[in-house]
Length: 189
Image 1 (tube, helix red, strand yellow):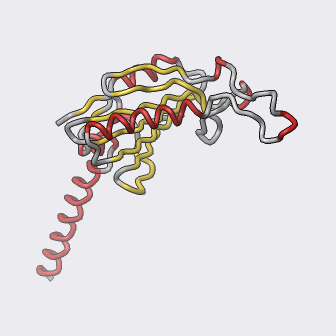
Image 2: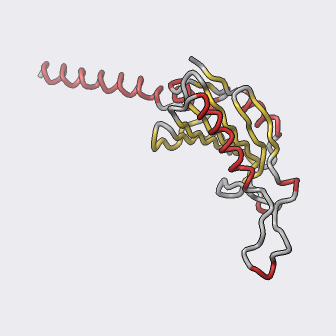
Image 3: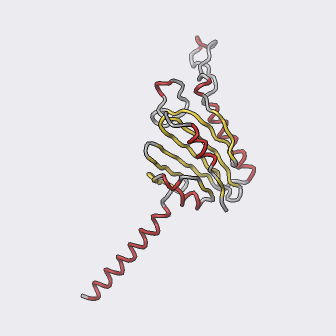
């Protein structure tokens, strides 16, 4: 009987330590740190889904943060990646010709009010913009806007990692919240 009790206690202790120490690995802050970066307020977000170590989704109240990490960049490819991702985002808001030939003289596009505003942080650019119900960009009408958003693209030379940080908050949120979050991104060794 003592042997069974000892074995059960041993396994309970192992389970306790496993869940205690592995829980830290599953926080947004620890995942960023493991990949050579930090972000203020990261510990306030609860990691929701974790399909891969390179993609994270966190929630804090009505706010959502999505982080994608791409690894193995050289300094040249890292800078190129930032430029490519920024160009891709901007292209969503460029004027487009309609797909039908009878309308070739009229362009469709977003008014300047809805276009992203580009800002620069220490490790790369970020954009302040609007998003729809499913977190999609390119929303060009007030009634379709569900979120204010920011899209930051940062590169850490020491780790060779690039980070895409998308932050969504209710459309009434003060713009300074997005600026503070993106400006707080830093690379760590």
